[in-house]
Length: 81
Image 1: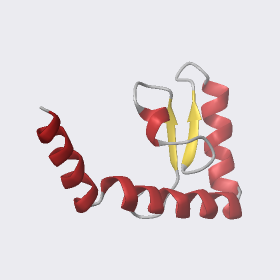
Image 2: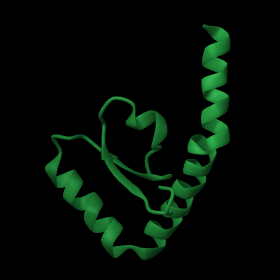
Image 3: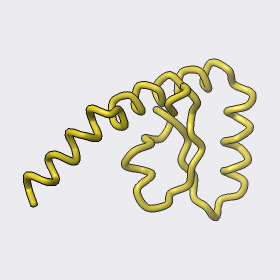
Image 4: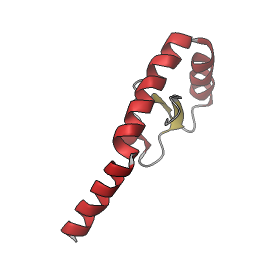
């Protein structure tokens, strides 16, 4: 994500809250092999789609995982504890 690449992930715990479907990546069920193949094919063949959600992924990474965001989150947890 930090390199502007879209994410292809499954619906494992926590992924849906970070990777919003078709905004920063594609989310499929881990049992949906056809869905995984179709998603990978779409990312490989549709440059405009891949570039758009890749740019969104970069922005999301900068927003959620920057040093400032991580420090702020840790600070909030310490204060509430």
